[in-house]
Image (tube, rainbow, N blue to C red; front, side, top):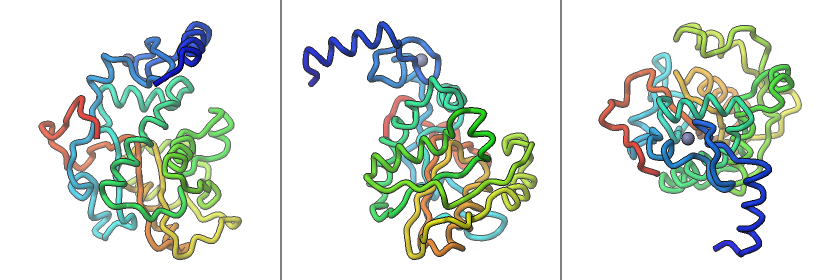
Length: 246
Ligand SMILES: [Zn+2]
């Protein structure tokens, strides 16, 4: 319950720094992430086992991630929000997604994470944008889980073509060349690493990063993203529950 002073300060902040809905940019109260209309339309992933929604085979091999989950399907209002996440106004989406994923991790018995990291972007991109959205999300995950965040494990080589502009085969080929283990990385041997990214598409990126983390000695790699693209058609339309929070 908020005190009178907190409510008063919230009202003042609303006037001078209006908060915006992470999907439609409509003004909303300070402590909310979406307006009521968008919140009702959000495409939450169905309450199914992660194994039914995420690829269990990558290029004919068992994936290097041991667990994966996400909050939304990459569609409609949720897609609008994740696209806004590349812009400053939608940054609260990181905390919103982290809260929900911590509940999923908890109900799936993932309670032994040691360290949280993110899929890296090239530093020139971070400089251009002013922030790294996957890192923001990883920091929000670390905070909600009460774990350490370390963004110095993986590196990104510069590429002029964005991963979303590539075809399926090209994505795997490019992920192979794009990510590497940094020389100044911390010792992660025997640790359970949680890797975070904004969107899980084919799994090429997450799987390559998970494989590098294992190569560096990680015992287990779990992955969480804000959205999941159903590139393999594992989710049928009737499974998508709207307006149902996990
Ligand atoms: Zn809205």
